[in-house]
Length: 473
Image (cartoon, rainbow, N blue to C red; front, side):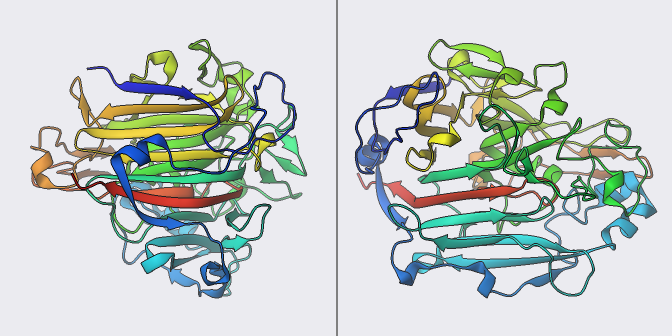
């Protein structure tokens, strides 16, 4: 069964800047924001946050940080204090974890407190105060207030989610006004005193410490130390990249920032911006990007690194090799694949954004869930093709390939993909049975922002977060 895809062109209510970008077709007129055609025909609005008015002000700095010790983990696999790391890294892992303190906070906001800002930060000298804490707050901008996600350190995390699980069917959308989480500006990843979005300070190391890609992988000597500089760099090198979750759906309640490998096992679907450093690409392609005007791919290395990946997560590798790390299979959707989700080791991006046009030209991201599957959608002005809407629907199961943990309730699933996750760790082995059993159910929770506590740094501003539910027939 082939996935449905829609490609629409037009203004769609976005204000476009006059900045000239080679190869970008920009509408000559502007219009006010309006509801999308999908929202107008199938859905009714339940919540809408525009952050206008002092009663809607938010500043997470006013809420206290709470020490996180891992005594109440979400699971025992790959969360920040999970057994996976101890089985691979041995006694050195506890020393690494004890070399700093972690603090978290969660702040409800919006009407009825339907949204939650969730943040994490590290306290390196363990004096009770994180050195460079992230914030989520409203701020004044041209045209009205916006919500700013500020993640100033690669070791912090800052995301927006919903306080309660999403309904059985829904449409969630928002406007991305600005994005500075890596990628090129004016042809280079080095700009404004940053490298691929990371601030550069002499002598400072920004690495995956203490959650590397796995023993024996590139970029480090596989020695488990308490010095972050011994671990794999995210600023540059073979694992250098920056990233932002444009809009994803995960399979557990109360999402909070955690190490990046944890998220690779918890996502159902995702749209993200994955800004690979040229060092990471090397002589390879770094994946590919679809040109939606010609429906042909070109190498990621030839892009501006400001891509939009639109993908679903499939079954994971339940038996990774010794010292390896599991993660869900990745199935990317583009107009080049006619909207069909195709399995790729390297990403296949659907299009390239143009950050230089923001905030006057913004992007609208939306996810829908209906009785049959998920729809991912983005509207904006792209480097190739100008202003358009790119939209793909993917059924929960296609050709015996399921979206990971798609079932909200036990009646939606019969247990056919259940399996035991087996770790062949360097120091120890462990098994986790019933990773998708009959009788299970997994809620939908959205994630917008930087969920990684060992990668990702930058700022983004958003507005007009809306939740739709089905209209009564």
